[in-house]
Amino acid sequence: MAGYLEKRYQFRQRVAQLRDGRQRQQIPTANVWLSVFGMFLLRLGSFNALEQELRRCKRWESWVGCRKPSADTIGRVYSQMSLADARQLLVEINRISWRSKAIHLQPQESYRVVAIDGHELSASRARCCDRCSQREIKVGEKTVLEYYHRVVVAQWVGVSPAAILDLELIAPQEGEVTAARRLLERILVHYPRLIDVITADALYLEAPFIRLTLNSGKHVVIVMKQENRELFRDADQLRAVTQPCVLHQGHRTTRLWDISQLSSFSTLGLAVRVVWAEESTVTRKLVGGKPQEELSQSRWVWVTDLPAATVPASKIQKWGHARWDLENRGFNELVNLWHMDHCFIHNPNAIEVLLLTLALAFLVSYLFYQRNLKPAARRYLTRLALAGRFTEDFSALDGATLWASQQQPG
Image 1 (cartoon, rainbow, N blue to C red):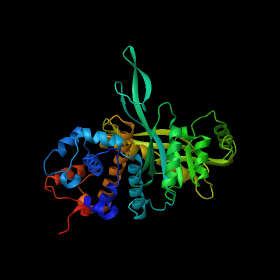
Image 2 (cartoon, helix red, strand yellow):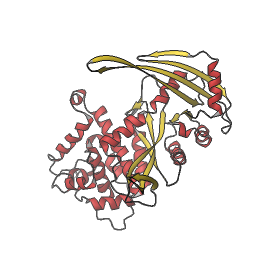
Image 3 (spheres, rainbow, N blue to C red):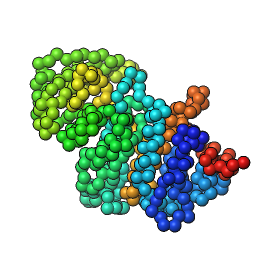
Image 4 (tube, rainbow, N blue to C red):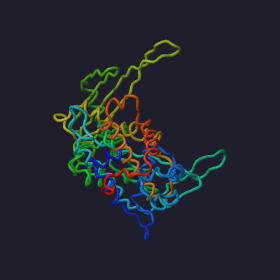
């Protein structure tokens, strides 16, 4: 892994540029960051578990260096670490990965689609900070305050791997879309040529968010659920007098309506296109040892600015559903297998830097597994089992540095 990171990204030199606010550093910032980065690679669940590993003699020195931090030092450094530096490191690795085609589009795809969505992190009824959101919940007969953090994440969808571009903490009493606009402004600056389409949930169907995207030369595909919208009613009326296109895709049959040049989105001031899909899916399952078929039906409506002559309605449907990549290949895996929701330290700056570190560990471990290991090595090795192999490797290194840029000549 270290050899791969050095060869592809000059990784150790980039990590050496990270800074924090300490006046007198006894342990370099890079050593602390590499400790946490290694914690995520090994899927450890807490700073205390990491400290137990770091205290073992002649093991982590090869990865971190001679000066290894304690759990308290890690928390203190991450609370003061430069958020801009951590974010820039993720941006640089993402850009290099795209240039080298380590991250790539699927066959016959030419648009880079980014999904934006919110996620709630850990909650507590005891500890809070000035950036915590609050809510009242019922516990038995009592009403108690619960403190929690939320985050907005931008992730490429329909690509391999589903890398995270950036994220933004949502401030208390702030709407998710307000934080998403800050995130969108930043990723449009950092990834101007690596974003073509923004896809999002119905919450983001508002004029300021869409206008910000369109003014940057990008496109939108956003779900519409609010039936009281004038745009929804007009699309429904036109659908009633238009013949649908019927698509058969495996077990799913879709009736698809493509309605262009609707001017009912008055606050946006631009004509939009609505793609309306009614999907019928047949699922087969065993019940009591006997095969049964179950029919499920769903309705999806998407709003987009992309013209029908350029992008067919079936592709809008595909991108609209690809937004679930952020749930399935993003939040679901990161929460269940990478401890994303664990509160390692209750500090807003530390939380955000930790999430950026996690995003980078998620990306490079996937790339190392998929792009560097030979098919024969991957045949009986899962990405989760790879973390166990990393743990085994530390015991065989005897403290010799893994980073080529840190090795002494001769």
